[in-house]
Every structure is written in C-alpha cells, then in structure tokens.
Length: 247
Image (cartoon, rainbow, N blue to C red; front, side):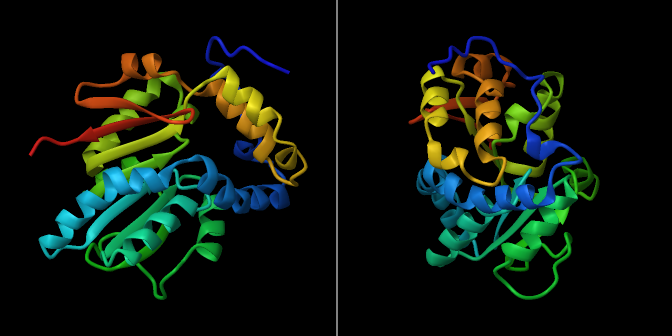
C-alpha cells in the first residue's frame, strides 16, 4: 500500500478536468469539496494568520476588502472566507473565477450568499460572486483586488506556465496566497486508506491521489518561485506560496 512519490508526475490528468466528465459525478465532486476542504485545506488557519489581519486594516481605511479566488471550482473556499469575514464584521467583495464554465454554473447555483447581480467593475459592492473568466482577461479590464487566493491550482498548471500565472496573480492583487498540497508518500498512503472517500460517487478519491502525485515539495516550489515570493510549510502536508507587494 505504501507508495514512494519521488518525481512529480505532472502529465497526469484528473478526471474532473476531462471535457467529457460525467456530469453527476462532477457535481458530486464540487459538493464533496465543501467537506474535504474544511477538513484538509487549513484555510481556517490561513484566514486567521494571513487574511483577517489584512482585511481589518482595509476596513479601518473605510474600504471594502476585495478578494479574487482564482480557479475557484465549486466555490467552497470563497464561500468559507466570505462567511468568516462577515462573522468578523468585515465588508467584503469576493469574486470566484474559473475558466471551466461547469464549475461556475454549479457555484452560482449553490454558493451565492447575497441577492442581486454583480459586474466586475462594481468594485465597491459587497457580496460573493462568480464569473467564468481568466486572470488574463481581468488584467485586461484593469481589475485590482487586495487579495488573490487559489486552492489546489498550482499543481494543475503546466510547469512552463507557472511563472506567468504567478505574475498575473501578483498583478491582480497586492497580496497573493497559493495554498496547495505537498507531495508526500505518507500523505498518499493515508489518503489511499480513506475508504469512505473511495465509496463516494464522485471523482474525489482518484483525483485526490493524482493531485498528490502532481504536487510539489517545498524545495521544488522554492526553486521555481519568483523573487518576492516565499514558501511556508503548513502542517500537515500543505504548502503556502505567498507574495506581498512592497508598500
């Protein structure tokens, strides 16, 4: 059962990314992310240590805290963060973006927490919104936010395109937090033993194993990172790649 994960296997394709992915399984995968990410992604700790302090400073200036979740999938992370900010009395405008229209359609149907229709250029509105759009297009529209986040996105990006992606994130936001898995043989083994996940009618189990094979180790992420970015290990089996613009 124990599997050694030496070299990355970036060529592997997750089932949920296939254009012909089964619709019911795909939708169940988006739904399952809500529970799985609450358990393993550690965004609650990231929020407390990295996001809430920044949001409170923005709030003191009388401004709406603007966040962009890049590659938001089913919208669960954006949903969590919006709820936490609201609980802390912080006005926020969060937009989740993804280039997969299936994900955005599901997020719009299941993760909206405020009524009304939003457009990208309404930067002072408060709420959680989703749009099928790329970071490249947002930059073309001169969209700017206080914080850019992404979850389990880095390992999906072709190696030669990662620096370009990081540059675009840093152009969009004054702070960027990339939260991803850390490749680990122990993590892979423990995940493989999670029998309840294996029985789910979604892509969670197999895609999770593929993601671990495609993910980075800390040294690998440090070596490819651009100047101004730093890598933090987040227990257990996670890496944060963080950028903050110089004031």
